[in-house]
Image (cartoon, rainbow, N blue to C red; front, side, top):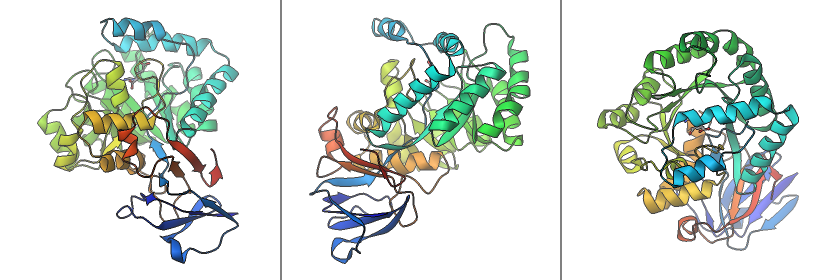
Length: 379
Ligand code: NIG
């Protein structure tokens, strides 16, 4: 089944400059043709988007969607001046362990559907609210049913019932062995109150030896070794990057490690926003993601992240859109998503607006008009 998308007001492909008067053909789950509307081939179906903007679907490369429970009270306390700490993770761990598989599945499905309805077509999600061998394995299996990319985050927090030494041994041993067949990535929360540099290095080295790609939660709540370690270990991405020294920025710019910024999280935890301008100007690859989770960032809206990046982080609209599409793809070391070119996955987002500028010009307004995810019309 092929679909010709025509009447495009502005086409952002991430494969050359934005163009007007272009058309696009999807065939099955792939992009089959991109070119001038006047030269478009026939297709089984024709969709006239009547002057609207078309861009790749969002690539949300950082979420934590396998969870149960609610942390509204913690959020409200934060808005009254309480600081965010890693300790809140334990509340979600208790609720997640107590939940039945179907409850977790429903929460996961609901949030993925919510994201897709807003133009997200590629979703990464993590384990990390189980923290026992059985619960991490269950989280990985459930995640693999629903999302494109799954990350093992056994090293999210040391659970209260175990010593740090014993827990690192578990995460690098029995837990890793059990979960590795179900995931592509491993991650560690390298931060005061979670895992220190040595423990984080041990977690990453064990995962790498097992053949998993690496990701790091780093420099979220203060300056620290996360970024440096991510670069040293050739992680695909270091996520948060809220507190960066000049040498962290230089190290990222000289590496293949993507700096993934999560502005919705910084706003929800009353942290400063990352210096994306400095990262971009220095030559680092920047991704934007939601960090959707019940504690530090309870939003699935990539458009909100894009608007924030433009309005408050001095990114241009084009830079923010690229970071939320191609940047996310690079953070997942993929080149088949986040881009509209022949052979890429048919992940297409149509805005109810004539240009991507409206994402920042009309913040908070739901602008998604149509979505194809792997060639299937999802909205
Ligand atoms: O990315 N930083 C660590 N993990 C999540 C927070 C999870 C939570 O608070 O439940 C994050 O912000």
